[in-house]
Amino acid sequence: EKNLAKAFEWFLKAAEQGDAVAQRHVADYYDEGKGVEKDPAKKRHWVKKSAAGGDAISQKVFGLMQIIGEEVEKNVEQGVALLKQAAIKGDIDARVRLGILHVNDEHGKKNLPLAYFWFTVVGENNQLAKQGLATVNAEIKPDEMLRALDMVSDFKNNPPKPSDGTPSAEDPIDALLKKHGAKTGDELEAANR
Image 1: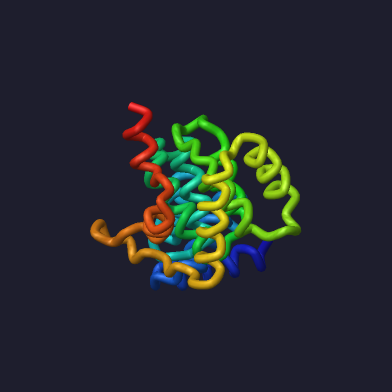
Image 2 (image 1 turned 90 degrees about the horizontal axis):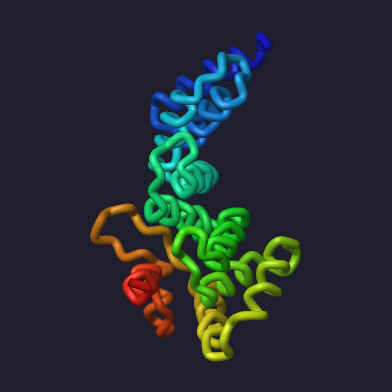
């Protein structure tokens, strides 16, 4: 317990200096009560700062919190944007969760080509992605699958860089969708209205 408290102190010092990974660790300590008393408000504060600082794991965690409205105000759009940033940085779980999000219509984000894309870029060894692809394969149209495969090829041959978060910066995944004639999330929502 003494070592955890000391480790927390060091992480907190680094976090206060702006280190995004240390900020994530501080959030974890507050979440789990390791070396410090549990504090959900401080956990939220530090995971949000860490996500804003570019830490992929925190982007995934805070994005999911926003999508489901867990401990924060629900904001599906911002949550999806953070998940995409984590996925672009290579976070496999974020990629799987984006695939799941686009298979289901729970949050108004059903987009089978995008689901196929995310499950495919996960790789062959992920059981959830395999199950997701089986679900998508049962519903996806051939032209949508071809578009998705072209997007996967583009993604693997020319990986996009995460956007810098500025309002004018185009989402790299939306740019990939547009390039291949697939509908972006905004276009799907507009078509469903």
